[in-house]
Length: 253
Image 1 (tube, rainbow, N blue to C red):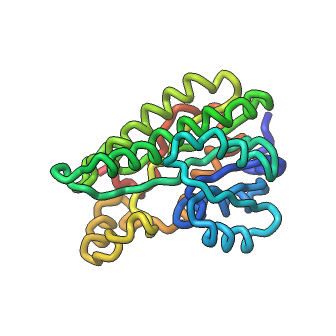
Image 2 (cartoon, rainbow, N blue to C red):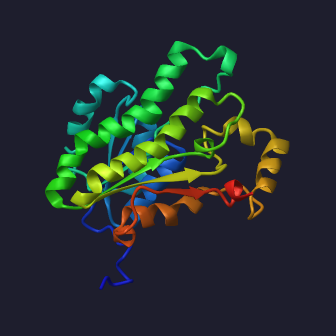
């Protein structure tokens, strides 16, 4: 029987978090480090990553990389394993929302959105999963969205990528859970991040979104910590292929 006092303890684990330069990605990276893991944060902005790692201390390492460049994924995976060894936990929080309306979606906007939001979580996991198989234990957490199931204005490519995340999560779970590698997704509601900056800049819209939740408020960054640690730890040993909406009940109404 598992000890309830250590279910969420990540001591001795190595975690990789993409999108760790800001927002929910950085919050996730910090939470995993606080739970005992050694964490490598991956993002494009080296300076922001460095600032984060300085705050965390020796449990943190960084890698500046562009995950939308699919041809670089295998090399990036090798660099991820360099500081602390092959990761046991991979959290895919990197994402982009071009907010191009349906009539104005461009080839470039479509490609970078699908590459970063959908292709990168799969191909980076594929490149790292051999290390998890060798240990017989792993946790992969993808980032879904309200737009996994809802259509928002200007969300054609973003919504398509996040709907894909739900099925990708199930498919990855089917492929790898038998090796002890569970794959799940978190679906955040409205949190104050760079990605949702335009939403929170509109006070009326922000209040309207808060009213749409069952709880009656938008998310605080710390609201992601508990669900994330659950999905990254031994606590979720019998949970795989699921999308956990962390949205204050937005999708319940």
